Amino acid sequence: MTDMIRQGDRTPVPRGYVVMTYARSGGTWFAQLLGSTGALGRPEDWFNGQGYRDRGVTDYPLDRAGQRAMMLSRGMTENGVFGVKLSPQRLDELWRSRWAEDFPERRFIHLVRRDRLGRALSDVKAQQTRQFRASSAGRGAPRYSATMIRDFILAQALNEARVQQYFALNGIAPLEIAYEDLLADVPAVLTRVAAFLGVSGSIQADADMVDLAIQRDATNIEWRTRFLAEHHTIDRMPTLVAGRWERLIGRVRDLASPRDETGKTARR
Image (cartoon, rainbow, N blue to C red; front, side, top):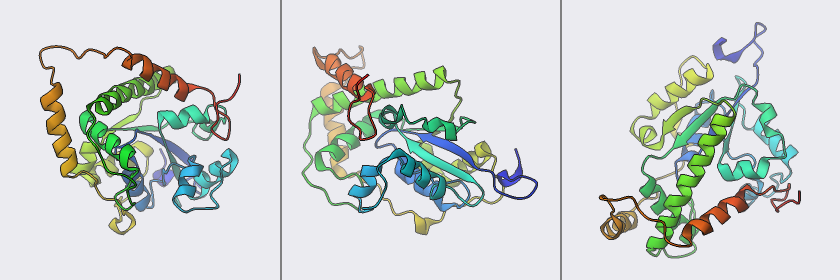
């Protein structure tokens, strides 16, 4: 790989990568850290037009062409590296847009959270309060629901299985990164990413460009303790409650249905 991804005339050569991740796995924080280095692209959720508008970017494009232009401009650092953050659900929405043509080298980073229960607890609480960032105001009070926690754990497993199948079908060998490793040693993870992308030189995150904070609090601890006390099954595999598996399969099928540019289910 060429140093800093440049040709002989020193003109930056665009090179893209995808961060494949899931809700409540540190994806937005990871994207901010990468972008703050000034050399590893800015892999934000560029195809989530409505999400940007909901956060106050009122002129953010809702069409795929406009979103692609944002990815290739704001998502690119001066050395030609650009990135995008995707989830299985976002890929379901993008299936007709030929987005992958911008990523011929198939460089994927797979960001996971090993603590599946912790992720489910965080996801349930965020869905109930509609507070997806610590800096945002919540719109409801969290309430313990063992059923929701169980459903989210199972839904996580389904989505992770879909991603592993996606990688296998497309011959993708991603760089695997765990949220827990990122928490433990940010510089080490950024060094791994730089090596994976072929970017040399000093890579450092700029703390002033990262404004996210951990949302876990006493509620998460209380829910974890209660859920494990009520539902531990160390001596056997957990059973699927009648109807729950069918509901989740239906939910995944709905997510996987072809969608048009507006996000509505498209007719075949």
